[in-house]
Image 1 (tube, helix red, strand yellow):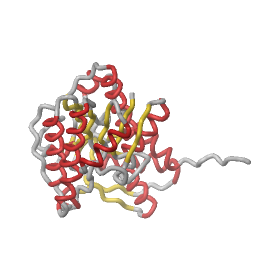
Image 2 (cartoon, rainbow, N blue to C red; image 1 turned 30 degrees about the vertical axis):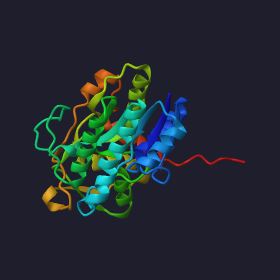
Image 3 (cartoon, rainbow, N blue to C red; image 1 turned 45 degrees about the horizontal axis):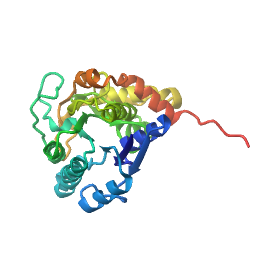
Length: 297
């Protein structure tokens, strides 16, 4: 198995590359500087150079609010680029794993979203990600689209790291409490991607669209409280975490009130289940805040 990973410098890409290296998986990671996924010539050249047996697309335009004023850039990263990759993969017979998002839904469902639920994105980001899914499907059948949500980890910018920074600067935080979802650690996403890759390599993968998210549901407020609690063991700081409504914190892009994803189909198919989100929060906070051992000469 030789994996070509796009978006290698993002938080999911870095975690996946590290896990692949630890497992002895042959993976070539590339960033936008090496190949813009929306550039067919650059993508074709890279596939010829690397000769992968499968590809993973973790590259995306993820600035949800900025997308409202930059629809062309969001479309290029989230719709055009995945279409280019999927067409190249289909032409070469290389299966593709493409990462998508809960933002393809409008958040009005009472319970967890399943794969068959109709999509209805609320903003530019969600619409361009939905268009990317459609482009991947149109190019061929040998793909897995993996929708995930509320992504956090040790790399890159994310909600957990923002909360750690603010907890060190403020005595009171105000966090939205009327949006719910499943926080998903990049470690679990990396494990899920490699689980899919193994079945693709073995020729046993069931292609299609799947949901994969952390185990358990919370609100942004609950997520923040868990982060602050885990951090307090290292910092001793316990700032107040006050609950507010979405209306109290207006943003350019509308967010789904419900981002809960049902991951049971993925678990049955690929035999991997994400860890409880609270467990991963503690692990990641410890990794970021625990004193590092001093090497002696």
